[in-house]
Each structure stands twice: as structure tokens, then as C-alpha cells.
Length: 229
View 1 (cartoon, one colour):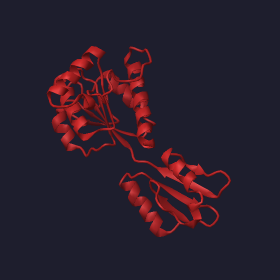
View 2 (tube, one colour):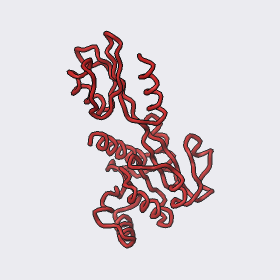
View 3 (cartoon, one colour):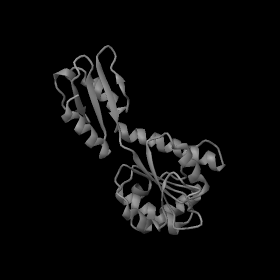
View 4 (cartoon, helix red, strand yellow):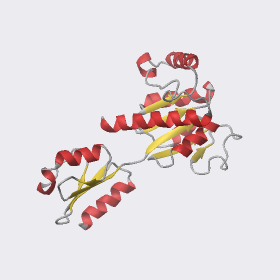
């Protein structure tokens, strides 16, 4: 591999960029591939297969070729509002997924390193905490407190920033009330419609781990939808 390519790979990994390193195993030529970018003649005739590997976040040798594709994808930020029991299970179930989790909760008695020793914790109100983090459309919000004073500011922030996934815990009745409050703050019905509420896919479970599993499953589905867009 050329030193130039190696330096570019290191830089992109540091910047947490989405890209693929494609290599011709026969002659050792390598190149960076990003989102349907133009490639040289070594790889051009396999561009569709390379693009398919990249879009599906797969790594491996393209069948019947000497082309190896190694795909790198940046971690998606997941902001959890509320250091509750369900949040502990979400963190546990997400260990082997490509999520960078941060928990926000202004209530000091909920936020302890003993309960959440593997993730970043911010013990502030969401409207302050969210403005201290670098966030974009590659961010997901999971709101769990059931307290409008805590949840609503976070939901407003996520809607304005167009997070790719927004979910909030609560019954259908609670969600209707939540959306009405957000509409009073100036959000349209089309905007509030993107909120997954009640959060999670319907597994039928009621316990904290079952609810957490349904949330992680829904988040995973939406992550893959986003990637294929």
C-alpha cells in the first residue's frame, strides 16, 4: 500500500468518516472509495459490486475476483435521555453495535458511574447538555424519563436538528399529549410524526430488558434504512 493511501486511511478513521479501502490482491494497488466515487481502471469494471459492499457495510473479496473491499463506517451517536433501568439494558444490548452512546439526566441520584460505567454521562438539563455535544443528522435520540420537563427540550432539539431516529417512551395516550405540546411549540404534525412513540417494535414484552430490546431492534432497523438511502 502506498504511504499516501495509508495516511488517508488513518486520517479518515480519525475523522470517523464512512469509506472503503479497495485493494487488488494481485498487484497490491489500493484506493479509497466513498459513496459512488470514481475509481481507476484496476477497479472500474467491479464498481457495482464495490458499491454494494460499501452500501451494505460489508467487507470481503468480491466473488471471482482479486478485489478485496474493507469497509469502515463511523459510529452513530445515540443520546439517551434518562438514566433509568431501561437505559442500562440498552447499553448492554448495544455493546457489539456501532453506536457511540451518551446518557443525559439532570437527576444526580439516577446518574452514577456504578450503573453506567461504560458510557459518557452528562448530569445536566438536556437543553444545556445537547448544545455541548457535536451532533448532526447521524444522531439518534431515545427519550425515557416520562417527564415533559426533561423529555420535551430534548425532543425539540432533535426535531430541529433532524436526527435520523427519534423515539420516546410512553403509551399511545402519552404520545398524543406529547405531540400536542410540541405542536404548541410550533412544530407541525408532519414533523412530530417522525417520533417513534410508543418507542420500540412490538415484541409484546413489558419488562425493562424486553422494552430495551425492542428499542435497540427498532434503532437498528432505522440505522440500516438510513444507510441505504
